[in-house]
Image 1 (cartoon, one colour):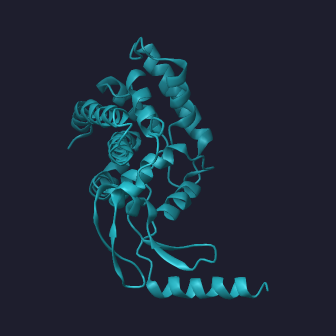
Image 2 (cartoon, rainbow, N blue to C red; image 1 turned 60 degrees about the vertical axis):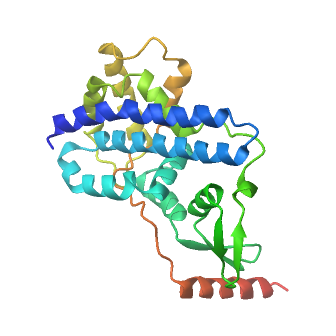
Image 3 (cartoon, rainbow, N blue to C red; image 1 turned 90 degrees about the vertical axis):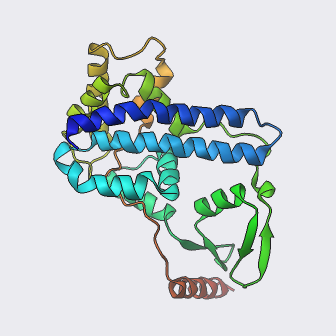
Amino acid sequence: MRHSARLDFISEGLPIILQSAQGFWRAAETLEDNPREAAVLSGLAEEESAKALILIDLVRCPVPEVGKRIGRIVKKTLYDHLSRMIYANAQSWRPTNIAQLQEYVDNERQGHLLDGGMSEYIVPNWSLYLRESTMYADIEVHEEGIPQWNDPNRWGGSTIAIRPIALQIVEALEVLGVMTRAGLQATSDIWGNVDFVKDEGPVEARELSKQLGARLDSEGLVTDVATEQHARLFYNHWQLPMYNLKFDLVDVPLERLEAQREAAFWNEVGEY
């Protein structure tokens, strides 16, 4: 697909994705007496918002590099639950550069990890486990091998969370004109001048955001409903482009976890 056709296609889909995310969130807000169901819908709103951010990051990617990255971005990030959850959560992180952002992502994509006061428990990836455990009543088998039932109602909070930051950012990008066809062209023209792969960070991102904001304004793409809060989200909270990051689940060998657990135990015992 040619770059112009890709921008056409993405500009057509972004409003659909945003409406889907907003619909899930509006429904979640009505379920005050059903916290588990509200949590499920809130999570879906976050994942839908992440889809929009992933596609906009594809637009921010330098055009000559898109061909090498689009397959991974679409097949392994856009359509993967864990990748979308990490993408959404990452909007609140403040890394110093892309390399550190990858480290943050790596911490969230481990298949299993140690937990407990003495690192005595081997547990699955928490984001995936919480998603599935909140959504489904099911049989679980933990390390000790004893099957037990998961009651999804025990995972619902007492009150609905605040509007997801990922959704807030996508809404800000919409009212500021980024998600229009002309806005995507401007985004590609400006952000495509810098390839965010390692040392690039907030300094470069802030300058590009300023350039994009000025162009959106000069082309009359900023809507009348845009507020200072939308501008703050655009300039201060829109995460660094993540088109070159790895999001797929990391398979952690059981032997490594057991060795780490034993080392943690003896380190704790050695203090007495």
